[in-house]
Length: 306
Image (tube, rainbow, N blue to C red; front, side):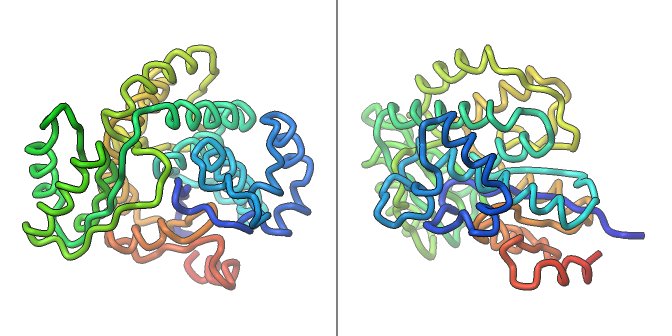
């Protein structure tokens, strides 16, 4: 019996100049043009022109990643007729998963993530930092002690693997937690080059405005099981899906729990989008049968696993 497939969709940090390949451009030119007209963004220039420096600006990054991941998914569908049993996306990638599972219309999703990015950019400034080599429970305790001091905030934003967590919050609090984490045994701390501090309380006001925006957006039940960042579970009601998307802005991405859920299926895991960030995180969470659609000889390697 052939093995089943789970799909993962990347979030911010996976973007890079040139990720919209010539193969995708030639195959899906009409979709790219419609997306460009809809948001009044020249996506080919944004993504593939090195002189366009907006790709790492979150209100542009988000629709650019969604577009690239969606086109990659369409390419995946031409390679196999196997319906994925589970889909999940890291942060922004959750929207790609909902589009791929027919829960949100692609063009609606483009407008959603553009609005999401703009609201995130309007939030109070902050930092994000990756902490490696320390148990997430220890790091969470450090954040809880630091959170609230001098009205500053800090918390665990992305629970990526048992020994890799991203924190987010006010500048001084994030730096303090980095120092305290090193004292507690962390092997490495890295301040990330991001334009907003997401998945923390700095996004409170943005999340309220985003909730208002989502009221007029139609969301259906997914055709495949989608694991949500906020709950690390699948939702059984479109209303809950909307609430999960709202809660995601101010709460941790539960990626370890998501990986555990996917690992329990014993399925082949495929990263569907640019880069190989999620491939590395999957391996860090004990998943061995993992491929990226950017992997050399992807077609033959997939056939071997199936």
